[in-house]
Length: 578
Image (cartoon, rainbow, N blue to C red; front, side, top):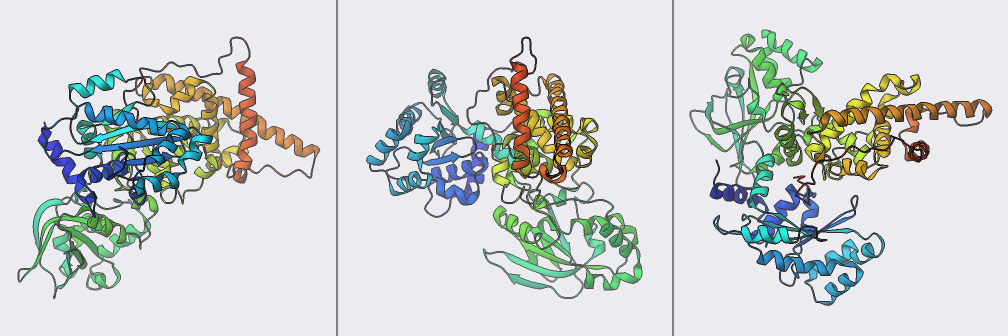
């Protein structure tokens, strides 16, 4: 079992890439936290930080527009593993809350001569206006790489229930995130390629180097980790199966007459290594991973009995020296020029790795979260791919079902907004709701069934709208961990009921539109292929559904409102989304 020193070292290793410029170690810790736990976009992390002299105890501020929440953060870094986090810092931080007690508090903060970064941050976020109009919920978040001691525990217990309270992220909680988001590394293997002809070797920026050579395919198929796919851990996607391109590639490998010409029309492989040495013996690698050419190497391995000495492959080997950021850039750049979609390019993203591990830890074999095409599902009973997950999150949690139909932005412009607050329980609930929607497809009118790709996310959204008509239903989508996995069976039945109700309402709505058009031939036709792709098409149906639910709820003994009781409230205030 890892010791406190082991966990301290793990965090130190992950903080290293964030310890840049004039950042202190506390600021680096905060930057890591903002990026990995709060899932802020990297280019927004620097804007959120105001740590330094005159910061008034405020090291960073983040405003979540969708949730109308204001996060005020302070960080404390310990150089050694032994010191613990007591209550003194927490008590001092609690006093900061007075600065965020409405517009008057903001005025007091600005009048107290804060440092320029804090003053500019308050102006950029327009905090005074936000408190005048939206009254955001304030969250105090204290981040430290030390473990809390008994005095900290007693203090947090004493202030429990106060608003705002303090959400303490200490070493044990941070380590959980660090382990889940830790990127895969290279395989620990020393090997040597014996190229055909000469080797082109050159130095790159950041003290890296690269070698380009023709390598016999017979050597490539002996690389470790092909059969179990571990050599492709850094690749954005795995095997895509029996596609047309892969069939043609395997046919070429089987044709010995094509082998001599193979390098002329094949793009080759890109490999990463921790250390690269080119000498008289050949191209020597310490550590290896494939970041481009997965389909080709898998095809070669599957047809290895057909390989002749004439079959050589162009191989580019890049030395990264263990620098994760450089490896990530090479992986991205070597794939974004090929037919790889934005979902593929996010497959090794820290957020996706974390969510995949969260689901594995909390739901085991009940659900596998698929983040890379071709990834083995480990024998799970069900699979939720992250594209469908993104669509469900956008439709149900961000309440934009019309936008969920458009896939291009999911892993691009909308990515951080969609996944910023996602948890394993959110995704499991999304899976259950989507399953209920798919099972109800046959109950829709024929034209709605035909246009199911456009209809499905509005159906899921409206089912959630109906459930949210009660306070406990609103809580289901805010804190699904209070029901899942303990009450999965009951939630499944409830979702089936509400989806069925909305299906009936949608059918009635379409029938009414058709009847209206019969009496008015000039009325616009109802086209489900387009109507559910715009908010103007969804809102009228939503109003009708809500009115019907409210009318039913007023009836004696009505069972239309969601009333399934939750379990105990979770301890954390800032939900573990990193």
